[in-house]
Image 1 (cartoon, rainbow, N blue to C red):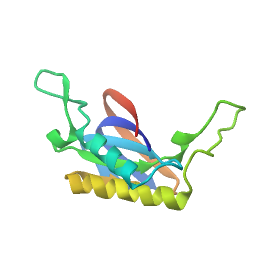
Image 2 (cartoon, rainbow, N blue to C red):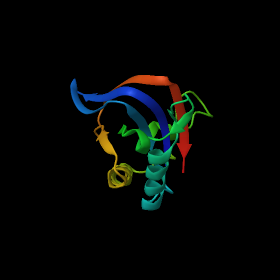
Image 3 (cartoon, rainbow, N blue to C red):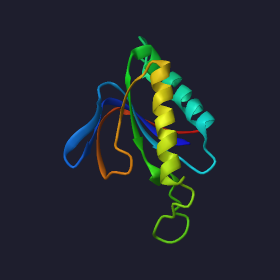
Image 4 (cartoon, one colour):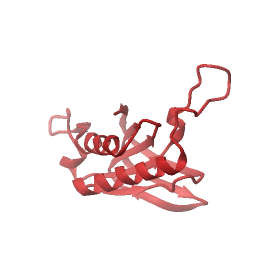
Length: 145
């Protein structure tokens, strides 16, 4: 699994103009799933997101996690993270997992984050989503497990 993680002041996802997921301060996570991913990959990514120390402590150092800050997590499925653009002008998505399995593993990720204690909002799998983000930082990281 791969995630583009952004520290957010706030973030939301709209589908057909309607908000389907929204968070306040926390993490906005665009998550892609590939063929080799499984439940263990989802659990590992959840733990990484929950404990990733990218929030400022009292001294202004990135030393606190979403677990430490009671922040929220927005998880948005993003198969295009596995887009291969090395050849030609159109991305190939061969590395992305099949939609049914990708959706299942995104759900496993979300449930594991909730089990760890996170407040989680989501997008709508397979929908044309408009993601709005007020980035805090800017802080953006790519995680891969």
